[in-house]
Every structure is written in C-alpha cells, then in structure tokens.
Length: 80
Image (cartoon, rainbow, N blue to C red; front, side):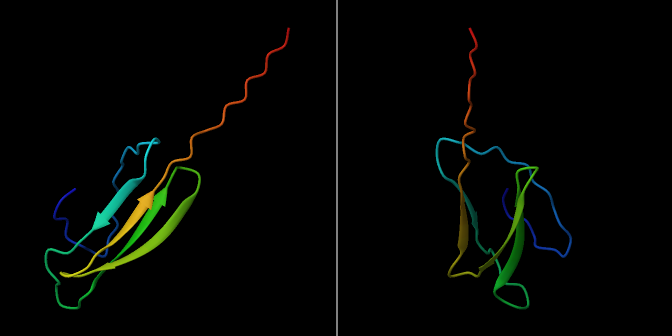
C-alpha cells in the first residue's frame, strides 16, 4: 500500500507472508500533519493470536516491524 492517510478509524489489510524469509513492514511519512511525529498502532494477527505494536515516524526517520512465520511442525504417525 502506498500513501495511506492516517485516521482515527482502523483499516484492515490482508497480506501474504513468505514463511521462508523475514517479512518487513516499513512505515514512513510523506508529511507531518499538525503534530509530528506520526504515530500508528498496528494489530498483527494470525487469526488466533494478535499483537499490538506502536510505530512512530517523521520525515527524517521511520520504524519498521520484521515479521517471521513459524512453519508448522507436522508429525506423521504410521501404524503397520
């Protein structure tokens, strides 16, 4: 997504993460509005668990989240 304006209301985005590498979520400011720095609260969920993260950013610096996906462990049972 590009150039989304921050608002009071939540906006939901569904993304596909690559389980074979770290996935970066990077936020940076195109402008500062009336009260810098820009602040955003992000809820990351996998459908079962969720975590809230607060990021701050301005025209000179930004914050990012690195997301990794744990691969499920499959246990096979074989009965002969």
